[in-house]
Image 1: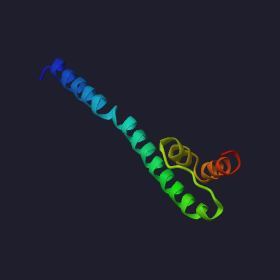
Image 2 (image 1 turned 90 degrees about the vertical axis):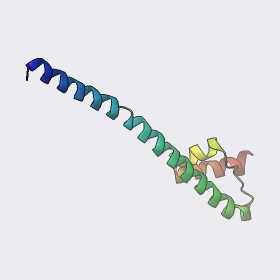
Image 3 (image 1 turned 180 degrees about the vertical axis):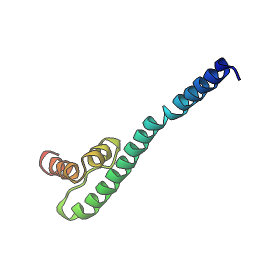
Length: 87
């Protein structure tokens, strides 16, 4: 085999690895973000179920689910405090 063919094959393999491997990380980040939003919606569901006794009701939408999903329990507590004292 000629050296040019070997270099072309190696360059083609590197190009294939770059094209296939590049989109994996953004898709993984998007998936993790969606999982956090779903977990935040579950947090809000339990907050609404338990907070109904105290008059706390935080609507479950994309913004509140994102806040509670990415911030966790402190985010849920902040949303509950905003609902209790501000709204």
